[in-house]
Picture 1 (cartoon, helix red, strand yellow):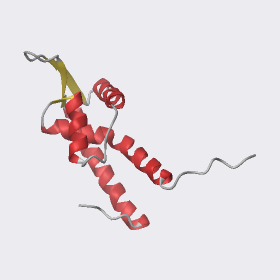
Picture 2 (picture 1 turned 135 degrees about the vertical axis):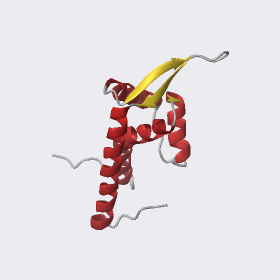
Picture 3 (picture 1 turned 30 degrees about the vertical axis):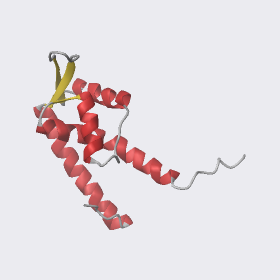
Length: 125
């Protein structure tokens, strides 16, 4: 059986980063809509801005996550219409979402701590 195709330098790191990014989407969204209601595009924009461009999500992936979170009742959405603009769905956190956010923050804090202990990963500020 032939060996798998060689990977490009850094591709393993990017893969790990992409997996962590996907795993953090719900946490990021809940944290943003905890502050105030936002429409989907603005949620994506805020994630990109606040991460200095390190975290970006395609609109398809972002909206799929928003719909899934709404179905789980972690967030609620309502349509908002403004003169001269198309209507947008604004999302805000629910009480169930607040509980999930608290649990996810604790989980991520533990994970970051363990990564530091085991792998020497340092928290960047």
